[in-house]
Length: 240
Image 1 (cartoon, helix red, strand yellow):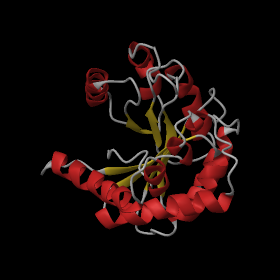
Image 2: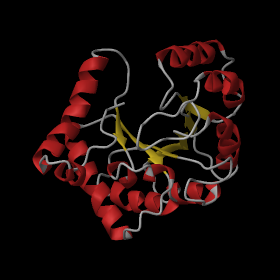
Image 3: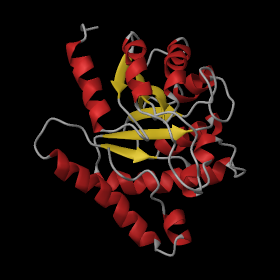
Image 4: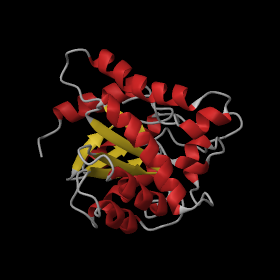
């Protein structure tokens, strides 16, 4: 995955940089990931984070930004156009807290019709997004686009993942994605979550039991040791 989650013209300009530097960083994120992959059979997924990520106040865990749908469409379409120039293999549309933003993203995604990818949301519990909408609304929103190849949750507390995947699978037939954080609450002023990543390890069996699980990994606070354990667990699991 690329390190493009927070990169945008709007965010760079607010930080005293330029829109051109933002575009260059977006393209470079794909090229650097491609170099890291080298000649191995590994896909490069371009990270497309939520509008709330540029606000630096934890809005990706609340949603309801107070901006218009048109602004969200324009924000995401602008970034997708630049990312498209670098030709990633897939898109990781991730950490989206709000169905309204997913709806805007589906319109923006149509402007780059040959790109496909997954959509993952942040959840407040096992049944609702961070903004409070039911997960069947998430399934309905992504169903409006043929470019979405999988749906799931990321940067969500491990204890909510199994129930959230069950709720999503009841509403759609897409493969499921899960890459939770290590648990705990995000502190926008000091950073970090203050939780141990063994929460993810302890619950791994529940996630692997999901019949439609397609992608599994870790988000904030989940390090390479845990991700390696996940890979080993999946490699030895019975094929589904």
